[in-house]
Amino acid sequence: MKIYCIIIDTMPFCPEVLEINNMVKGDLLRQVSGCYTLTSLAQMLTGKLSTDLEPSGIGYGTWSDRLDSNGIVDWKWLETSIPFYLWKEKDFKFISRNLDILTVLFAFKKYPQFYKDSKGYNEAEQHEYIKRIQGESKGNTFHFLNYRNFHDACQRSYKFDGDALYKNQRIAGQEILGYFEKDWDFSEPDSLFWFFSDHGAWFHPHFHGYPFVQNFYTWAIVKDNLENPIDIKQKVISTQDFPLILRHKFGNVPLPEFSKDRIFLTEDGRAGIKLKEITTAIACRFKNWSGDFPLQLSYLIYHHPADNFLQRKVKFDRDGFTIDEVVDTSVVDEQLKEALISKFTWVP
Ligand SMILES: [Zn+2]
Image (cartoon, rainbow, N blue to C red; front, side, top):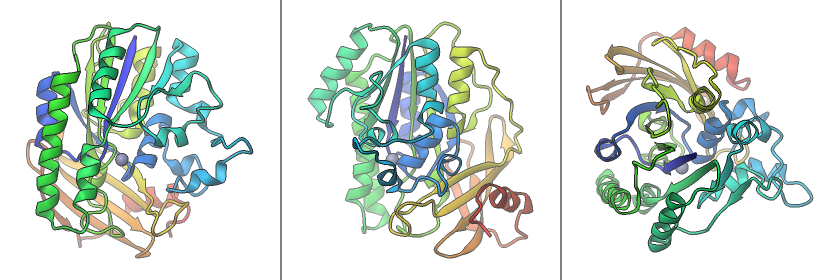
């Protein structure tokens, strides 16, 4: 069996996501993720907020405090993560193709069943690599591959206007579709594909500002070619649901049912504000559902630099694209506020 976790770093929910889904013929999910790679992946692989893993959450530089004398990042919570569960229960090896940040997230030197397979993002190399792993069968393997095209588009557009970002994102979208068409066989038997984005274009419009909905309301696409394909009934999930879904798939653990009024919690950490701490806490809930997807979102942010709460209201069209996002000056949703205060000890 193979699991392919394919991260398209920084790709917001945009028309090319729908094109990817048409290509792979998968199941489209929307998800509340983190606002940058490390917290998103920590949430995804452990099912917890980074605030539940480390006293101040996982900021950009927190890892440097966890280095042991051998130069290994010794996170105390690693063995609670889903790759460990899959290794213990189903003998999965975890192989990161090119995601450097996982060398921080995982102590590769410490555990031989977790390793980094290769380096770089060279197109020809990537093509050969994918052909090879899709052609071989080495027991159960959990592959993690990263596409940086949207991340690079975002960096190229830094300090430019929104048009530059928009144009660079369209180019990145076509590049991704081209690679997918050329490199992958998405009908590979005995495999599960999980495509996702970890966050949106994080420093637009302002590097230190409050996050916007596109930063944390991302997407995933599931294509299950294994026996008894998974049926995820609730199409709006949290990144933190990933371990629940895999435990359900591979361990027959029941998948909890969440109400449509579920409060989602997530977080952000801006290195320029605090290098080793989470700096922003977000609680949100969806409203006005049209079938599987919502037409509205309310979210409350506590943002450390501003030392203040901000509530916003978002409207989506029926495809899930944002129509309108405004500051909500009505009474603060006390349940969202309570959820923030009870989870994040530093929120007043
Ligand atoms: Zn990222």
